[in-house]
Structures are given as C-alpha cells and as structure tokens.
Image (cartoon, rainbow, N blue to C red; front, side, top):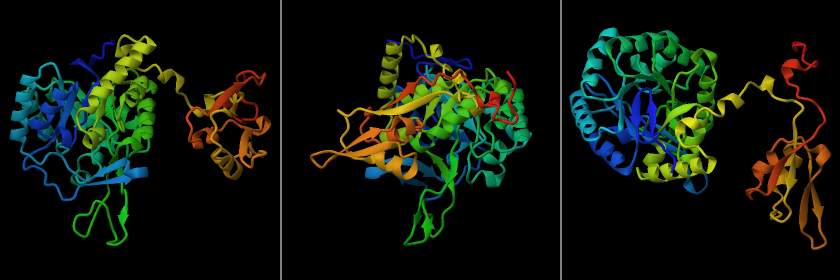
Length: 424
C-alpha cells in the first residue's frame, strides 16, 4: 500500500487528512474521537483572549440540492466560547496522549503586538506542533478588528505574521480569507512576514436562503440574521483555483499550502494535492457524516496511488500546477468534438435541447421509424464546448474526442489577430 504519511513544514502526520479549525475540533472529547477514527491531525478551534466569545442561536444554515443533499453550508459561529485556560490544558493533554498526530492551534487576538506576545508562549508551552493564524473569519470578528479585517489588508497580514515568527518558534501557518480580490496578494504578504505555510480557503461571505414567511434570512436569531461563512462541496472549485493561483505564483514559489474547501472524499483531496497542497483540511463533510469518513478517504487515496504507481504523497503533490496557466497561453488551434455512444444513449434528448436552445445547434434530433428519437452530433457545427456532455445523465455516454486540425500550436499571445501579439 502507498505511504500516506507526510511531513508538512516539519510537522509529521500519519496521513494528510486533518480536521480544520471548527466545531469538530473545539474540545478534547471531539479531537480524541477524531484521532481514534484515524485522522492524521487537527487544527484546534480558534483560541482568543478571555473573556471568551459569546455565540448566538441558531448558527447554521444550508444550501440544498436534490433530495436535500447539502451542497453548501453556512455558519455564523465565532471562535471558541470556552476559556483560554481550559483549551490550553486540554491541548497539552491531547498532544501528550497522541504524540504521533499533528496538532495545530488556531489563534485570533487583536491586531496588537502585546496581545500576540502574550498568547504565543502559552500555546507553545502546550507542546502543540504549530499555530495557524485565523485571518479569515468573515463574520463577528471583523467587526472587532480581527479575522477577515486583518486578512484583507496585506500590511496587517505581514505585520502579524512577523510578530508570530518573533515571539514563537513553532511553524506559523497563515489561514487566508477568500473574501478578497486577489488571493496572491495576501499570500505574498504572509510570505514576506516569514510564514512557514499558508492554508486556504477560509469561509466565503454568504446568505444561503431567506424564510419568505418570516422575511428573515437563515439562520435566524430571533427576528434577525446576518451573513455568515460559506463552506462545503459548493466552494471546492473556488478553493482549488485559489490554491493553484498561489502554487504557480513566482513570488510565493515553494511556499507550502494546506488545502481547505469542500473536501469530502479521497478524490477531492487528491485534486488539492495535485494542485500543490501538502496537507488537506476537512470540516463540513465531517460535520455532516461523522469522523469515520476518514476511513474511506485513506483507503481510496491509497488505492488510487497504488494504481498510478505513486509510493508517497510527495510523488504527485503539485503535479498539476505546471499544466495550469493563463487563458492567453492556451492553444487556440486545439479542437475537440462530441461523440455520442448510441448503445449507451437513453434517448432523453437533454443534449439536443441544451445545444439547440443555448449553444451551437450541433446535436441533431432524428426521428426513427418507431417514433422515438436518436441524437447525433453534427461534426462541422460542434465547437467542443462540453455542454452536451455535462447535461447528459449517463456517465461516459458522450465523449469529447480530439481532432487533427492540421494547424500548429498557437496561443492568443502570439496570434496575429491580437493587436498586442508577440511576434514569433
């Protein structure tokens, strides 16, 4: 079986699957259950100064798909509502009892040097393996000058990171907010401040739904609501892009990344690792399905690695980064067209409707003798947009096949039709 162990910024972990800083890591009871289930590490829910934060009720809402499948999850919960002393005591004991697991402590205190100077030695004394700076919380804490209020200002990111590197010898992981125009700006600031790694993404500003009877958004706190932090499978595409942006940025080259955002199975994790993540963090999937999901994650990832000939995580970490580029460097002359497997086709006509109404009218509907319809691609009209393949309910029925155009590689940067093209 493939070796799933990792060493992330000097922190050893038996596998890359860590629980993210969130309700599942709020106390020793939960963390111990997670370790017993097989998680490689945890990021302890964000600690702050006393008095502890006060949470509201209710706190969660969801965006649903078919059959009440939770596509996206929203929360308005704050950092830990337990005292600093209790958390520090529990962290110390858990790390002592589970020395082979990664234990990172998430932190958020005011953007004042003395506050960081005070809390960092207390955390380091627990024996924890590292700290994660919560620069991403999108609700509650920004109003107090913390969370996203720090993460959205590069100067603050750099400054606080430097304070932490000054007053703490543990690895410093900076957790970035996605509620920013260009994620690379914050990552570069963390890098300048001496960060050992970045983790991303934190949750996205969101309102998932509105109760139209009471005219209050969800979750409701009495007769009011507010925006919260969005997570779950729906944010995975956003997270993957931001991870890739940092991984391929020359200014943050080599900066380790802990990937977060919509990871619910081994394949999700493998995709984050392929785009440059050295570890992955999971929250929403564990909250919805329990800690034992890590068993499938470990087994699935190990089996896939075996099938691909990868003996360790390092062997495929970042392998997809070099194939991710800007649009202007894509081959304009590359062409694919759709091919429908008539034996697999169920005759639903969804490909025809989608293409006929909203695309390029490249799927013909042919009436057969028995009154049913067959659907065929008109090759010369097909632009290879993938819409028919996406709408088809039968996996593998429609394949996008590359065709030889007889034209050499040409990107927009060198295309004579581009008034700013570069001459070859």
